[in-house]
Every structure is written in structure tokens, then in C-alpha cells.
Length: 93
Image (tube, rainbow, N blue to C red):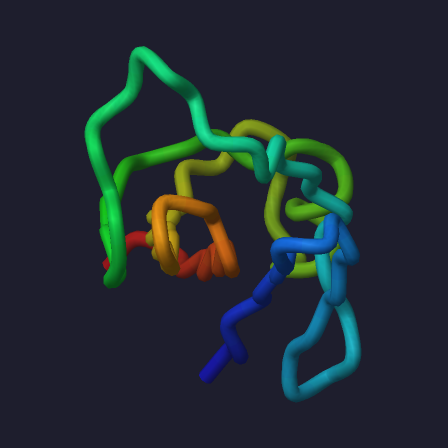
């Protein structure tokens, strides 16, 4: 089984990358609250979507560039500010 890859951005803007194999994808997120976005005072929000692999993800999963992955993203809000963003990637099927 392939270990999920995670990227975490905390409220100070620091990014950490982790997985059981020590690899990660350098993904950056704007941690400022958007005034026109939904009101998220506290708690997590989760979404899932299909994405195509770029060169780095394809190398990590040992698949061809463009292979479809499932990306699950969890955003944790605290007092209206993003405190953490976690993205997990899995192969389809």
C-alpha cells in the first residue's frame, strides 16, 4: 500500500511536508481569511476531488504524468483564521 502524502500550512505561514516515507509535495496556500468567502469561525472543512498528477506526484506514486489521483483537502479554521491545511493523495481504485 502506498502511504498518503501530506502538506500542512499553519497560521504563521510555515509549511511542513510529511509522509511515512519522508516525501511531500511543496504546496503553498494563502492563510489570510477572504472577506468574500464563507464564514468559517472554527472547525474543519473537508473536500475531495480528482486531480491529474504533475511530474513530482507522478514520481512519488511511480505512475505516468497525468494519472488521476483522489485529493482530499482538510482546512482547519480557528476564530476565522486558517490554522492548518492538509492534502492527502490516493490512487484511484
